[in-house]
Length: 170
Image 1 (cartoon, rainbow, N blue to C red):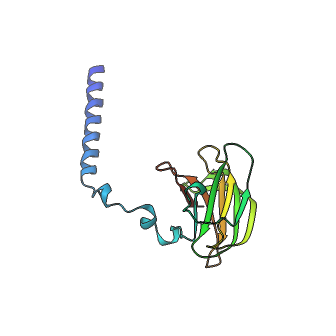
Image 2: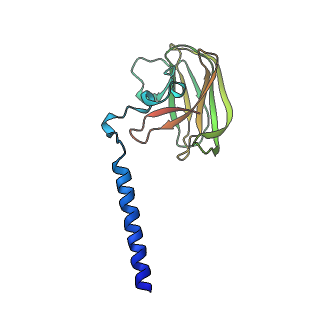
Image 3: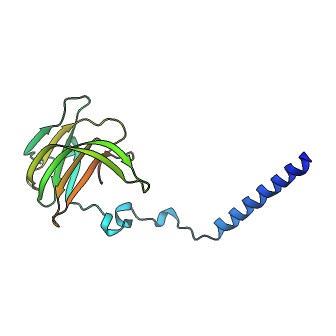
């Protein structure tokens, strides 16, 4: 009886694996080489505009004069970030972020605290911010009012690929 039951279960498992393999083989697959970077592949409403950039201050090109500096905290290790704009943006804010939740679609929510504010971040006036990165979740952010009048919020992340800074809209 046990042997018959085990044979039946084994045969059922084999049939299920064959059906799954046949189903997978009938799908159209896209080679990785044909994928576009996320910014180009994302729906237009989700694309991050290039109005504000963040980079490590030590990586800034020679000759850039920093017109302001804000020290967000004194915790170690400190990092200096240079925020610059391609075109002037209004109501630029440096934010402290605290993780709150993730919804069923993977969208992260943060508690936001304003640390510093500029009426305008202009291309000729980049801002240096001294801050600390704690752990893997973003704890630093910025916001500004875009050309369309909407406030845009970004978390400042460190890329796991090359260590550069990445702004992720939330």
